[in-house]
Amino acid sequence: MSNLDAKLRVQMRIEIRRLQRRLGTTSVYVTHDQLEAMTLADMLVVMNGGRVEQAGAPLELYERPATTFVGGFIGSPPMNFLTFRDSLATGAHSIRLGEREVAIPAARETLAESDLVLGVRPEHVRFTDRGMVRGEVYGAEYLGTTQIVTVTTRYGALKARSPARLRFRTGESVGLDFRPDTLSIFDKLSGRAIRTALHEGGAHG
Image (cartoon, rainbow, N blue to C red):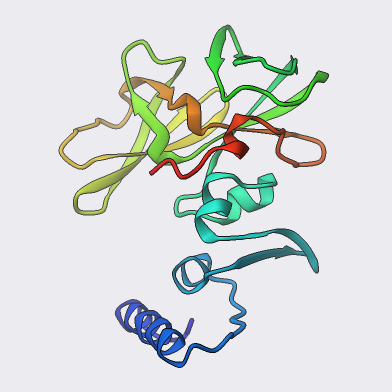
């Protein structure tokens, strides 16, 4: 459906989904458009270079990506990634990001000190003066009731989904905090997700 205009694509997704349910038949839909995949699928399979990265319900892949590839592919905007170096002990509830301790879902495996990646969805980033990460507002994209605010930080550009009623100025210094129970930890070299309590929970909403 990539050749259709945006409004017609939305209508076609609804019609295809309605047809699937009415006929009750199993169908395989192949697409490079992650929005199409998320809205049409009961079971989603993400492939990379001919290899299956993860398979599961759309919400499972969105909230608990098995690799950095899945986290970066699923979601609009995609997951934010912050690289850091630390060790991890089974049961640990925090990691060290720069000079700050960041709360995370309890770790379920032990790792020697290595390069790791913290994954956070834009809707789980909040603005606060005492934020663990500081940066400058690069710009904002208004989407009606919400906006996507891009902030440049020492870890790269981070995107936050925020209510449209909040106002941000380009160049403004801001602090960012993250919702602890939603954070993913990945091994930087392999890209695989480190097992934490996040993988034992249900939907976050």
